[in-house]
Length: 497
Ligand code: NAD
Image 1 (cartoon, rainbow, N blue to C red):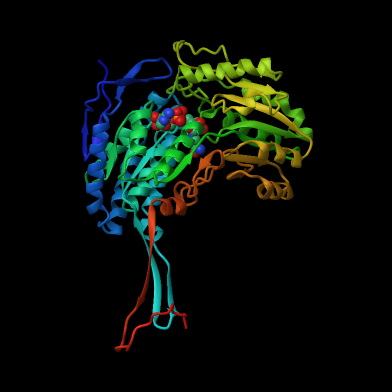
Image 2 (tube, rainbow, N blue to C red):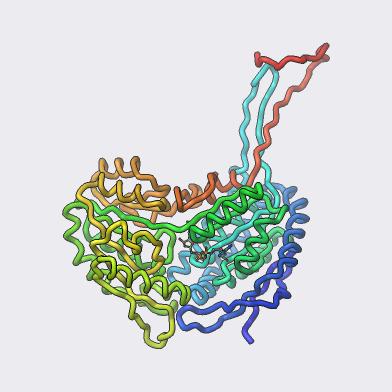
């Protein structure tokens, strides 16, 4: 009997009474690490009730008290970073070094949450009319929810609950059923930091649990990160139920390679950005658009990509780990096959990759396609595997057109030595996050994570100032204090004199 992953309700880590469980697998060898419960809907209701009750007192904590608790949490996360990274590597498969980065990028959001006193500042204008002042406060909403994907088991939950809770809300986290153990470790440290019970609750499950949450009347705001079809579903259902929703979906990220770029930098960055984390990053570069003379660099890109190898998380020489599950591997293999059938040139094919001692792991070797066109399935679908597509463009204008015609708008980058080319690119491209000689431009938490088009449904993005706006309501006060009695009333609209 494998361990059952606990749920967190009202400060207590308990075993769910669920009768159905899913295995949590180590994707490198299919070992069942634990079983995750499909939490009973009645248990979810209970968690929401406790979160509703906890909100009444949590919102009254002073802002410095909240900030201080987050300082303790940040300290604990740093102390336990390696332990969290190990749990994360085992259930997700990514290398230990990459898992350390996953946790670190989450810790940075917690650091941002420690700045909550300044982030919560409202606005004031004196004398909007004679002796009248207007000022605004921002106040928390109530119970908020986070629904997260498998590919960043630490960072993405930490995009959400620290910001929401620092603003004074309480929270229900529903992590990916494929990586629930990292979330529970984050929650254990949260409780250890001293936060009151009921402020953060964690429930597990899949479609039914998510749908129940989306329809619950007490939920005020929903943060979602995952695939496009589910992001659309969460956005439509949540907004239909009159809730605030931010839903981040999938991506197809392009790197434009100009002929004046530093060739070695381009090649080094392309290898890591396409195959790092087995290509299972929403900001992975999956398409390189080679402009003009840069089209002659294909052989060098191929030899660089051909030298890296996947392996198990604890192998320091492994460039990346396995895919998350059998279904993902089948999807990647299907798309590689379609690449052959639809006329792409397959320069590297990772379909038959095995790792010694881990023969049943979900490994795929680095894969490279050239002569790719926009009508191929490998281009239209998010592969989410260690695969890079090479496309050609004669000019920067043509490269920009290719990217703007793609439905996704999460991230993109340009490698060039020309300021004019970079300026044109950043201005004309219809993508939310742009790197100039930076392959994966994920903004630090004092900015926001700003995907566009099919990569994001909603208006206020994650963390940064937008995250604070998403988790709060603005209250505007207009005040006048009388120094003496003023006779009579006024039935007309006042003219501000
Ligand atoms: P997923 O959509 O399968 O799952 C995400 C969450 O939704 C999980 O918690 C899951 O339990 C739940 N879910 C799954 N199916 C559901 C359904 N039918 N109804 C309701 N809930 C459902 O995504 P995943 O495979 O875990 O993650 C990979 C995807 O996430 C990729 O497409 C990737 O690009 C995307 N992603 C996007 C970003 C971003 O910031 N834009 C970041 C990370 C990952």
